[in-house]
Image 1: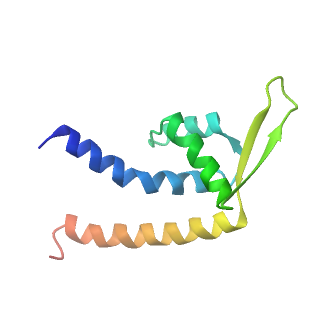
Image 2: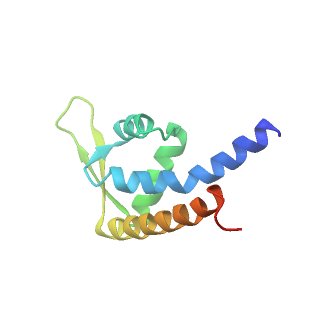
Length: 112
């Protein structure tokens, strides 16, 4: 099998999980670079050129809120999951569990 094809499908599979991981992680306020590090530590590798536009999009959709912290030498924008983002995260987690349960049936030889 072609490695590029595998990479393409893995990227497609991970795309939605990054949104969910951001919403879950940002239940506690965090800034972009810190989020990159925590996602990487959790095993979800995301490029900064992907993450920052995603954070702006989620904020524009009302799923994240943000504020600037200017107390430090360099101002940083902190993000937090909004109430609407919490509702979406709950729905996505429920769906994730349902899909995982369904796929387990196939991977463990149960259902065909």
